[in-house]
Length: 134
Image: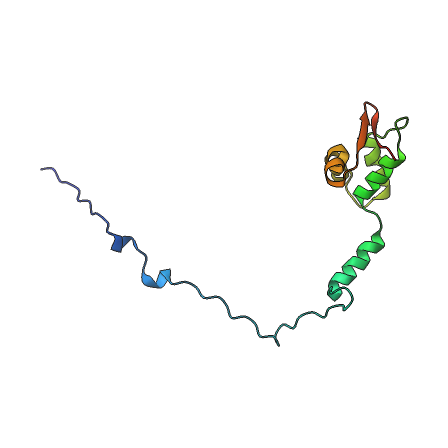
């Protein structure tokens, strides 16, 4: 005698999850105004105290890597162009706390294409290096 395996057909009712599992979770109640007061704002700029401190610290740091790249390329000329490696060496001297490999990646991204597209600076190129006509 051969036995046959009965297969049952699932209905929509058996496929559905129990009603308790499908209930939507409610959002947590918003904190009252007295629990989290808004940070005090500077009347002149509308910035918070933390943002003002960050801006002051950033201003105290000085010029960034990309601005330094532009400065160095502007100082170069067709007679004395800078290679990307020379740019990286100079940046490593000016920014000793940064990784030279990371600065080389920044140079490769910025020179010449991104300086042209984002900052509208025309970087000149020869087989000896790069420069910006001042």
